[in-house]
Length: 301
Image: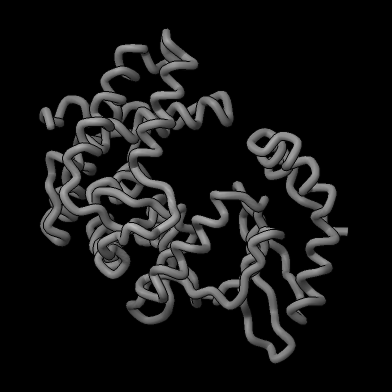
C-alpha cells in the first residue's frame, strides 16, 4: 500500500471533487497495473503538486518517469502537445494510456531544475533557448486549448463574481477581460505554446542541454508563453526591476513585442490569481502584486 502525502490528497479532492475521490480509491491498483504492464518498479515520487510523478526502473535498469493523472481533456492536451513538439526542447514520451491517465516518459538526467540556477540572467537565457526550440506555428487541426479559451475562462469568472473575487475588484476583472479580447483579436500568427513554462518545468538534460516538461498546451501569442516564467522566483523586494530585466532579455533573444508582454502579463496575472483563489482559497502574493506592475507598464492594444 502506497501512502500519498496528505496535502496532495487534499489537492486532488479539492480540484477534482468526486472524480478525485474515485481516482484516489483506485490509485494503488493503478500503481500495480503500471508495474506489471511495463515491467517496472515505481520508486518514491518526486515532490507532488497536482499529479503523481515518480521515477521508475525498468527490468534492464534504465530509468523512466511515470506520471499518473485524472484522465480528461487537460491530460489529452498535454500528451498531444508533447507529441507535437516531437523532442524539440521537450521531454519524450515512451508510452501512454489516455483512458487511464498513464504517461511513461523518458527520464531527463541529471534532471536539475532551472530554479536551481542562482544567476537570474543565466537562467533567463537558458529559458529563452528552450522557448526558441519549442515554439512552432500552429496548424488549424491542433485539438488543444487556445488563449481565447482563457479569455472565456476569465469572462466566466467575471459573470460568477460580478463584484470581484478576493482582492481582485470588478473593475480589474473587467479591464483584464477587455485586454484578453484586444490581444486575441490582434494575434497575427498563432503558435503552439507550452502553456505553463517556468523555472520548475525546465530540467537539465545533460551538459548544457535543457528541456521542458509538463506542458498544458496552448495556441496563441508567443508573448503569452513567457508570462509564467516572468512570474516565478520573484524576490520580495525590487520585483519590478527583475521583471524588467527578464522582459528586455527575452524580447531581444526571441524578437518579442515588449508592449504585448506587459499586456499579456496584466491579463494572465489576474486570471492566475483568480484560479488560485477558486482552487485553494488563497493566492500568491507576487502574482497579485505583479498585476499593478503590468497595469502600470502596458499600453493600449
